[in-house]
Image 1 (cartoon, one colour):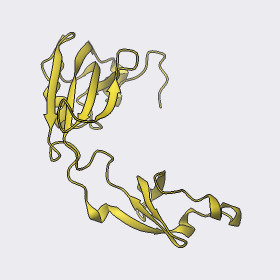
Image 2 (spheres, one colour; image 1 turned 120 degrees about the vertical axis):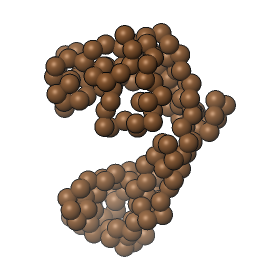
Image 3 (cartoon, one colour; image 1 turned 30 degrees about the vertical axis):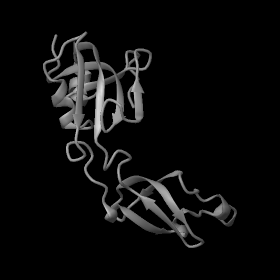
Length: 168
């Protein structure tokens, strides 16, 4: 069976920055494979298209440019947020997120965003809302472990559902 629409695809891979010799960013191995619904709206189209037509057992290796992946880093996505938006009571004032930690924020339209704290002052947190992989060329090398037809529930939800049936 080949990777195509309405299939559940299981992969193992190594993700490196730049090329095959670049720094290792992520490993999805046989013990913890990457399983997804093909053609998911939650996964890069360019990543999925590189896998189209492959079958179980097939190896793959490809590079996605920054533009094909998560795009360049945007300075407009680094924002200053008043620290009082994170304080619920006075005791929390000293426990506000530190530089390097991640926060979830909700904008004026009620949309939730996740970002990394890059600077902390007494009055503000500077939060980088760029995707962690923005600005990076990504090199994937791996193997297709399994391809199967999606179940009716998976097709309706357009996502992989674990075998125990738990839905999130």
